[in-house]
Length: 164
Image (cartoon, rainbow, N blue to C red; front, side, top):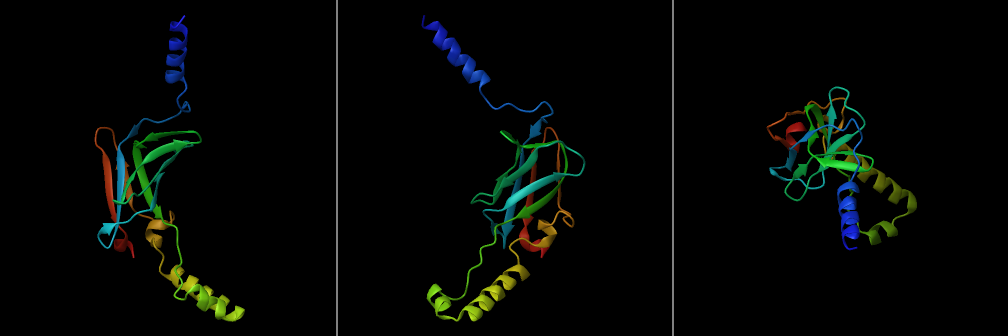
């Protein structure tokens, strides 16, 4: 009697994992390291776009505190570590957080029109000097590539300031 629950548990463990689509590619280790001023740059989303048609999956990663993004290939409800074989254009993005040079109290003391103009000017300054330069952020102009091949882990280091 105890064998049936044991077998049922084994079936669930082996058959209840993520289901990959039939065209799922074999993936290979791939890391992208991002630095700024020679220091690890955390929170950068790195996206790899195939230079040829590749299917419906996404290939991307986010840098950790050491500036390293472990690339994953993902699709709706499934993900595998690594990237498929091929040549990829690498783009990067990072959420902009505008830090105003005035305190909340100073802003509240300003007339509405003056406060609005101040905030718009601060936003314009941030747009003029984005965290990630257009040469890395815009897929239409990005030139950074990485080639993923079987047998050799793909690795690339990007220094943000090299693209300003």
